[in-house]
Image (cartoon, rainbow, N blue to C red):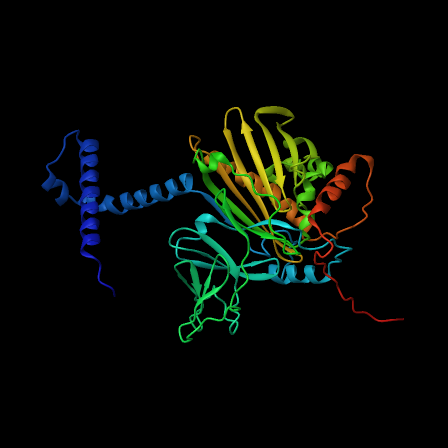
Length: 452
């Protein structure tokens, strides 16, 4: 058994004595209205009995404080959300079977050109490296001691070791764990080979254009290797700390990336899929049960693309109302502006007369052709109790997971059967097509079968 540090032992004894003294004092006040001397308090059997309860109460208070004041972080696994469970079968088995048997449809290119989020900034401390899968590639994301973040291909061009698995950050370089080759994060050039007299000019690794803004690290992707043609706007309230980080959620969705932002233009689905109250949960088999009819959400939505020079942006304006037992609960009216920037980033702005304002950064990042990582990070005004943004994030998570159940099981239809009221869906597809190029990668499925 490891020895307990003396300083920690003294602190524990001091805290125990303090609890004993406080408990004895309270007992004296309750029993006779008179305070006992300290020596009698410590010698009395009553405080010794109260000590375990006081300690448990203290621990409960610390736990409750952290729950109420700390950020809300919900990280969902690939098979945790969006599938119908069956007795005798694991979630992983069901998710795997659905992915295998589902018809994919005539899919658009799988990797649109644009900026994609890799990590929240606070998840990458100085001097550390992370292995991330993005766009079907393995990349090493590392931060120097000076705070600069770089993204490079994960595999060393020497003999293929993964730089993010055991690699070290040396100055501005990342060092290969296999032979110690060091690659510069800015241009990818090899700066040092420990056992070689000279470093060849051609010894380099691919680097990815990177930006760190709004508390997130992003990479730029273009199928033709073109440099960034637009930038991610800075949210001044986040930079100035007027809005502070209050939590995040993370999900994996088995769908084509375009299906997810298309929801902004699919106005009709809001009044059906998202009308039941959040108390009815996320399993679509039960959300419309009669027992939940006492609470309903209503939505008024408008979606429009933005003109030049922001043609890569679109905007959804949403007015939310809540009805309890048929009565309008105006306190829960919320005004939301969702501004999409490129194919994979949405700024969800919340504004409420009583509960203040903030933003959810909704990020969609392709992991592989039909697997998307979706995160929601909320920043809210510092003066507001953290319960408010945490409730907003939790409500957003519930509504989002209803969509996940649709996305995980649906087929992409390139020529959908639409009515006049669905016109925004077609306009959204035309707008989104700007992120594809002639050389954008497509995925082909080989169907095995029998000829009759």
